[in-house]
Amino acid sequence: MSDVRAADPSEVDTVIGILVEAFQDDPMSRWVFPDDERRRAVSHPAFFGALLEAGFATGHVDVTEDHAAAVIWLPAGGDDEPVEGLEPAEADRLGALLGLMAAVEPAGPLWHAQFIGVRPGLQGRGIGGQLMRHGLARADAEGVPTYLEASSPDSTRLYRRLGFRDHGPAFHPPGGPPMQPMRRAPA
Image (cartoon, rainbow, N blue to C red; front, side, top):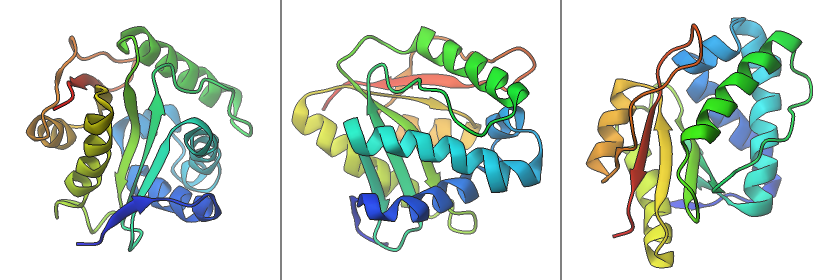
């Protein structure tokens, strides 16, 4: 496996590419951005670009050295700036989702793992766990809890193995798939 390190802001396009690939078929991504081609070419790049801007400014962006995976960590409260380039219906669905996420996020201080993505074809090899352990070690050294929302049964199982516990019941936007809020106390 490849080493994990902080991404450099000059790698923003590479990190966007990792996350676009990783979340192309994610159930929540499909609900927020239902058009497959638009999601790949426009919506995801705009959305992840805005999150990365916040990640580089106030949080952490970690990547594997081989660019197989990336994660964006934001402090509690994260970033809720509008995303430029979205269609009105996409912005409405995204706003509904972000509102639900904000309502269940625990009070800070904490580090919120916004998106943990591994390129398709490389998933299931422990890369996501390795990436997460890097960020968890940093949070543990700071004595700060971590938080995330699992968007699939596979990711829920991974996060539980890493010490996360359910933070209340799963939630979902109207007509959208469920997400499981999860919190981890510092070790």
